[in-house]
Image (cartoon, rainbow, N blue to C red; front, side):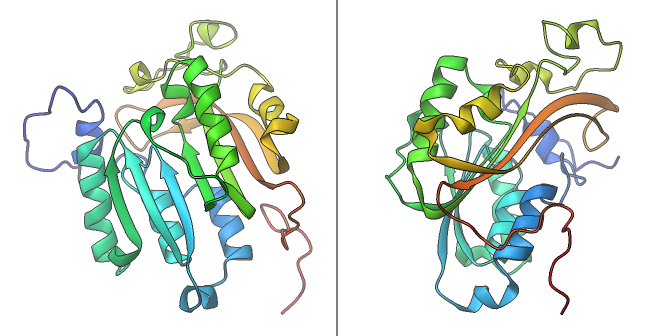
Length: 251
């Protein structure tokens, strides 16, 4: 893996090295379930129409932010990595969507979520980077901030992860991620699904899965345990055909 010219990693930017590489950690491709949803619900012609609002929490180097911006959303990208946010701005300029992307250096626990404000709320590996009690509070604010046709995409590490200190992950012999130290809140089996069906969340699940995956995008190869949720506001029924799409209408 190639890397950018070496600069000293700031002590307060845990992910600086991962985002400073030429081959940026986690790659360029957006999360697969989110990309499938956007391709079905937000076709290219929507870009020319009125814009929708999105917030990408723990945006990293911007793979989901860029997909949202490309689909016509105005995106607020929030992260604690200053280097990650600078890479988002750089990539947004390269793709011609800089006018749709705003970066914000902030802790997700300390930002405000206006009620019924966002048409998309994305949280890819962020609720697992904060203590459980904080994650519960941020989760509820995320849900409350969705509009009536809003979509929520959440991605967390689970106790299947080899970095987890509890079973079954702690019994795994698979290699652990170089950034595992940032995960402080491994989700139990079905925990994220239970949060989504709680009446207080006011959500309807479109897709949920728990899986193991191998990651080759940063550092030595390693394994993760993940839970992935794609949900919409309860009562919203978009033309969703699944991921991969099953029996969509022929064009």
